[in-house]
Amino acid sequence: QQLAAIGLSGTGRPDEALCRCLDPSGGEWEDIDPPEPDEWLGTMLARTPNQSFLDFLSSRPYVPDRVRHTIYLQPLCDPQDLKVKPFPDGPWPSWSALEAV
Image (cartoon, rainbow, N blue to C red; front, side):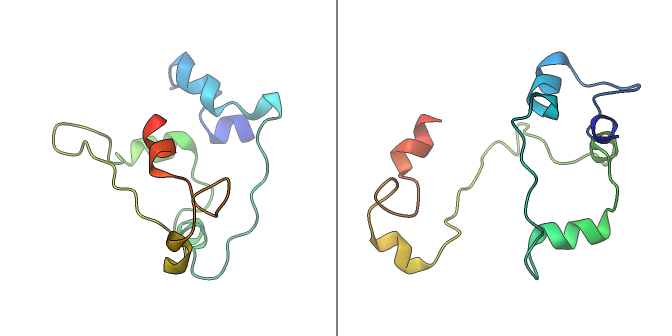
């Protein structure tokens, strides 16, 4: 059921590289904690219950193209956290570490 939900079984199977990224059968995936009140995940679960990966793809989500080709990274932390050193000494990743990815 989990494999079908992310589109790894049945018809319309994504390409092999994407399948390897999404396949939870290797045991590397962990269950996520339930969302906190007003978190995005909680809102989306209520709006899209039981949405499979193929359903998501069928919704025509935004994908990179000539117009949408930039990802904006914004700190999601307390502004005071940005005044201390970056990870591993502080709570947030350094810009150079993000650029290296």
